[in-house]
Length: 420
Image 1: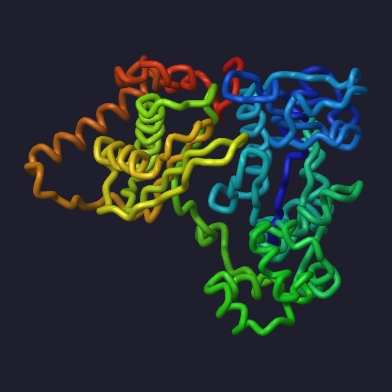
Image 2 (image 1 turned 180 degrees about the horizontal axis):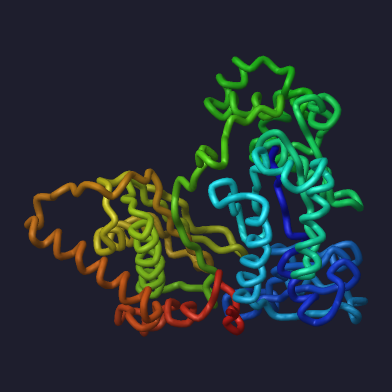
């Protein structure tokens, strides 16, 4: 028995509570401002009432999209450290019901709980326990939660997204016995976990407009058209998911990356190169932290307001050395950039393998390579201890550099005060 639990409109709800409002009965938005967001600011989060009354969407709408009759709308800045603090409190409540191995923190506002072995300790029915968890979270943090209940991760997640988020009890349930009634009628395919807009459009082109259609499509034709994903989609339509939280058998992150919205249009190659090196340096540190090497480097530069830019990836000899990865990223940029105005930059490292070997090359001695790896590790440890901005490359103080300014942000937004 799996619970999928979502903190409803999490950022906006935390801000509402901090101001003394009930999150469900106040029109409030969280606006991230700064030189890197256009349109006067990005609407990072909206309360349910703000979404319903003004049609504003999180991470899509800008301040310029505000309707003229929004004089009663409350606007606040983000406080990322507060969100992390409340998220920790909420997950500590979940730990009263499951041990650590049966808790999967999916994101800052969603968690999965495998209650199979423990639910009978807390009540007589699944929904009774779900309501009990909702009450404890609300009483102790002021945050409303929605809970999907299923016999596996997929069922619980879809029950939460499709049903729990759209009824007053904020509860939803799917099990194998109710697949025909609860799963197959779903027609909005991109509302289903793991089916994105592109996949939904491809399915519609072959006559699949609901999970019922998908469940009764020839699975061999699906695999022929979509590859392995076709088989996974077919299983999903029957509510089948063999992943087990305690075995960590659910999909893991296959790549690490970082992206930035620049404070202005960048037109000079040397300024763009500075930012690319900064981002590459940060992502390289992340894969080292998780004991990986990367065999695939992906670079995207573009502009959300104009056409242009490129998206390119190169396979490489696996490594996690910053010096090598930084140069590869810059080489990809110079080989593909056509002089367009750049506002958005992303760097991702994929094809990850365990960091338990080293491929020596012909252009450096083994001693030089070992010293480079040591230098990376020392740099990582110093930044971890004293903060990223205490040890940056000199290029970060050149025009175009963003690393020092962003070091004080959390998730690209204002962190606010620290919370114990």
